[in-house]
Length: 522
Image (cartoon, rainbow, N blue to C red; front, side, top):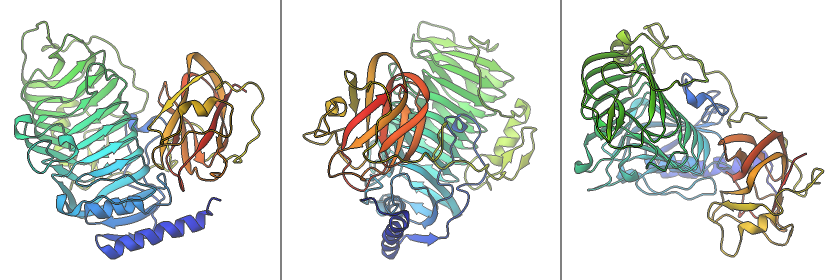
């Protein structure tokens, strides 16, 4: 039987209290907002990015304490704001276990979780040789922190050499007022400063500094990894970067009001069908700041209002297609959100006064004037385009009318527990079931052709009723959230035509067991 909310909250606070006793973590009162200001760009889409708004606020001074705060929540989707002060390093960052987290030694692991804010406070937060890894997670805010000298080779190593890395179904991340830096390139043991791959979407990087690295960042790890995209980069400083500022493979990127200084080999690299909107940026003392480089898999761009100050260009070749000094557009890109772009001429001044950690979270008003951050607009704690708090259905629901479309369909998902099968989700037999390898995971129903669906029934196996906690239902084709809630049952949503629908378990009180994942058209 599922614990009442009050009991679950008491249990979470008790866990955090134990972590506090171990040192490095301090409980503070809940706060109404998770971070100063609010996102602009693609992080505002797909329901928005609010991080831990409305949740418990915890102060952490070690990496282990950050993990303890994540693990002390009632569920993997329980909102939390983690205020960080001091230096986080290998010596104070260890794995912590719990049903609401999946952490590891030597890296800040945000895995299979949602609704989290990490914000630097007080004298500042420095992640020294420790990377931040976001995997299978959503609605994450990282603000006002420095991440430096994260290595993939040498000693010590962390996060594959990425300062901040995202992969595997990540949605809605806002990284703001951060300083991301290395001390060289791949030969010195470093990789990317800001990397996204394996189906990562709806991300904004704003008012940040990326410097002294061989690689600024990528979207897509190979020419076939093109399911990523919808990323906004604005009011950032790219300084002394060799390449990937950023590298886009597939998807859409929007770069506006960035200051690029000493881009040494290539800058915005649009490849493999990617489309970049590049506007009102200031490029200075740099080479090949826009184009398709090191591949014959071309990408495209729309360039408007940019300033070129001492920029040089290489000659076109089979694997080299620089935009050239005219920066002529090769496509048009429609942007779905509202934004105000400063004139390119004032970008160096505005960015110098706003970008990076420790700048007071100052922002531009779009008219070349710097101002304090605005208060965030209240929003849902779990970004969804549909109802933000759907009423959970009964654990043994009466199915909607019509035919169960899952019978005869296909199914797949994340790692499954031993002895279970994805086929058990759609066999009409309540005595068989699928179970994830851990306390969280996801399973999908898929069809060979587009199919209209308007409701889902999740039936838990006998003996496990009430185990499933927080969940999200996604249109796997578009990556959008159709609904979210707590507990198994009937889920209704606007009729949607798709080929694959995914049920994500982001929190549970034990080992989830789904006997049937039923789908209906009405």
